[in-house]
Length: 167
Picture 1 (cartoon, rainbow, N blue to C red):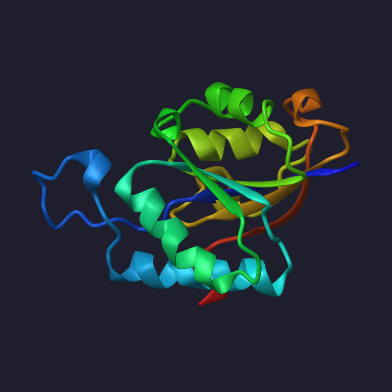
Picture 2: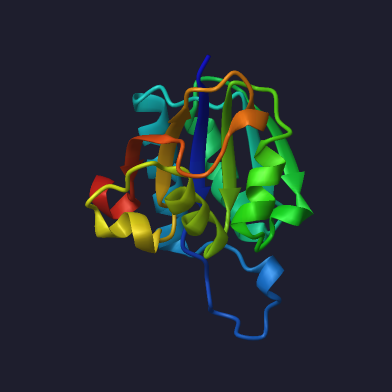
């Protein structure tokens, strides 16, 4: 069996209100366009999650809300407060408790970028992979029977993109 992970960093958020609570920040115009482009890319490549684990921050929820209409399937969505600025170790622990074959995780840097770098056996030459800019998306496969068996440096990077590469 193969477990597939789709790691999506939230799209570009707005800093128009410097007094706004970080958790409540929404996407700016570029971010909204980027999220839809990522959704279209996922659908075109048939990278379709069965379950989406999403930070409960406004910008991750909005990113997901713009991706979902582009997908031909309707994945089960779980919003989790513990994914807000979560460490890579915490995200991996959450993943290891899952049962669906294909899972998308929508979260924040630096955690999601560090998780992507830590899970793959070989990093691509693309410098954006290490930076993991907004709306960066990686698809990683694991040759395991269950998510509980996933370990660092075990994944195979199937694909990686950013909105800038697609627009």
